[in-house]
Length: 322
Image 1: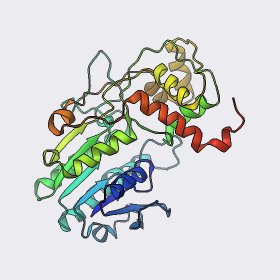
Image 2: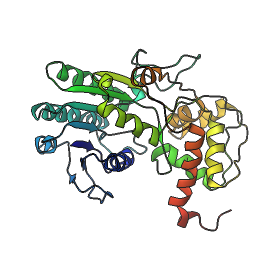
Image 3: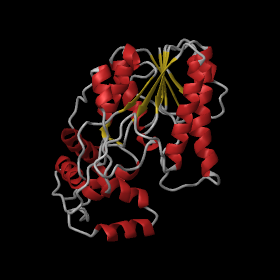
C-alpha cells in the first residue's frame, strides 16, 4: 500500500492516477472532499490536527508526502511564519513519526529547490551538494522539515528519500505559471524578447516518473535528489512553446530588465520577476548516475502539451478567441 498525502492537489491527482495505473494499491489523503478517478481509497482529513495519522499509515509500505503550504500569491494568514511552519514542518514530522510507529518501509518527502536558492547566476549549477540558503519562507520551512526528518530516521529503520524539484508545470498548473499561460492565451504582448536567461523546470509527468522510481529503487534509500527536465529553457522559449500548443502566435517585445524589475517589485511581484527573468540552472546528474533515471518527456514537448491542455481545460473561457 502507498499513502499519498496531498492527493487532491496538482501533483497528487496525477501521481495517484499513475500509481493506480501501475497496479499499486493507493490510499490518498487530502483536505478537499473530491472524487479522484480510479482512487477508491481516499481519506478527507486535515493533517495539521494529526489525530488520524497512525490510521492513515496503517498497512502502508511507502509514504509519499506531497501535502504542504506552497508559495501564496495573496497571503491571508495573520501569521504566515506560523502557518508555513505548521503545514510544512510540524505535519511532516508528525506524519513521519506515525509512519515509523506503523513500520513504514520508505518515506518520500517532496521538498523544493528553494532550500538552496531562488536563482543561480554566473554559470553555477545547483546540485545536492550546493549550499542551502533559502531566501523565502517556503524554502526555509522545507529545509527545516528536511533536517528534522533526517534526525528522526537516524534512530529508526525507515528509509527517507528527499526530492528537491524546481517549478513543476503542466496545463493545469497553479500560481504564476497559470497566470503566464492565461496571458499568452489572451494574446497579450509580453516584454521578454531580450531576456536571455535559463530556467530549469520539471514537467509534472517527469516528476511523477521520478517519484515512482524512488518507490522501489534500492539506491534511492536515504538520499537527496535535485531533479529537473535536464535542459534549461529561456523565458522567450517557454512563451513560444506554450503559444504553439495553444495554436497562438507568441507576442514578445523588448523591455529593459531594470524597468521589468522595478515594475514587478512595485506591485509586489518580485518573485515573478525572478522566475521569468533570472536564471536557475540545476545539475540533475545524481538522479541519472545513481538511479539511471532519464526524464521521459523533453521540456519543449512538455511545454507544447501544457499549452494545448490549458486551452482544452479552459475551452469555454476562450471559445471564439483568435
